[in-house]
Length: 257
Image 1 (tube, one colour):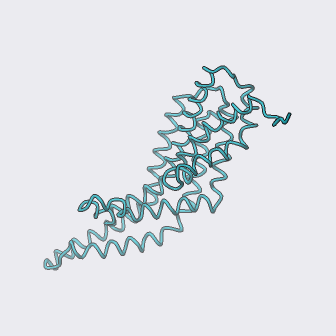
Image 2 (image 1 turned 45 degrees about the vertical axis):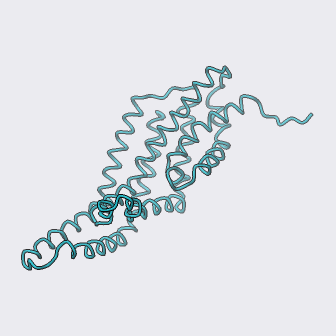
Image 3 (image 1 turned 90 degrees about the vertical axis):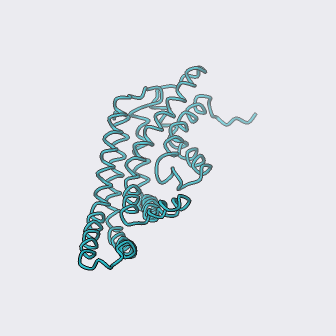
């Protein structure tokens, strides 16, 4: 009789690991969100869970096979994965948030005020920044750092251990503050320059009242925004490296490691 040599504990352990990994992959850039289709995210979670299962089972010291315990553990692993994914999403989405702020300031998002159906097409800079962040995470190998940090959570917070609500809330609050600061650092210089341009255009209308400021400001601000974004793009890579390290630290903080 052919035997695979796989025990019930290993199968159950793999499913519990997948519950945490799958929830984390579903949210964490560049795997989560609109970057990958849902089916690809599920397959990615299944693939990532395979190499993490042996060490996770060893760190747990044994997995209870009682049905009630399994249901509780499955729900707990999903909750842990969601918490870890949320903190990574909060930090790594700072670049996309900066793009959204630049969209509003530069006039790219104004089209949605006239036609709500154009809202998705109007977020030009936000889409570019999101795509750029995802590509940089993959090309630079930052995703390996994030995955390595995530895999260590099975040692600091093994299967069977409870999730600290206090540590999770504190870490998410710190991540939100850091994400807001990173957004300001990325978008702040461009917003300041565009504000100066607005002031200059306002003074110009005082000198020449016949100038239609509403018509003139559109090409000037949009063209200047594109120029400034092109200049600022090389500075995103070091900012992303810092956010990657912050994501790993935040996951360690939630796990209590």
